[in-house]
Length: 246
Image (cartoon, rainbow, N blue to C red):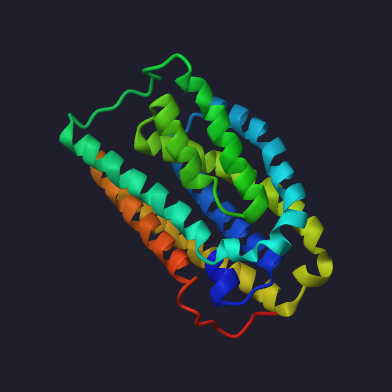
């Protein structure tokens, strides 16, 4: 989303909507793959998604007054949050590599820990509605931390949740934007192109990750997320911008 807004000059809510559409399409691909490989906890995913809907809509509602006065949030700050998520995957990969490489999907540790998933989901869902960033890897992190899901099961369930979360957010943001901006020739031509390319990349990436051991999956995800976070964060200091898209 920061790339669309900062580098390519999209209007703020148009950039948020396009970002959400890309996330939704990618999540659909990963959901289909995850269901086929039985790597999605459907019951848990549905219950957490139902809980997330309120926070998504609450984020959209607050964003109407918050975002226009805080556009610098996308020029660096969002990237640093993404960097932290990527580093978290690296740390997890190191921990798995140095251990026995096996993980339980049963919650362990504190009795309270399994219930902290609701706080994590609320935070990520609110961010999805507010700025169009989050869901996906954020949901996965909390599923791993709070419920001890292995990486592929966590990411599969997170993508399942992300598909519905971003779908709700897309509908909500579309009402804010209105048909005049959604039906421009440039937007109509751009959406199918970026969705096809992004979804194809997602399918290709999934074919690679499913052939890797657990710790290398974490390293791969961490590397991609860190690279995206660096790109988003550096935009604050690198002021080059492509011609605005209208």
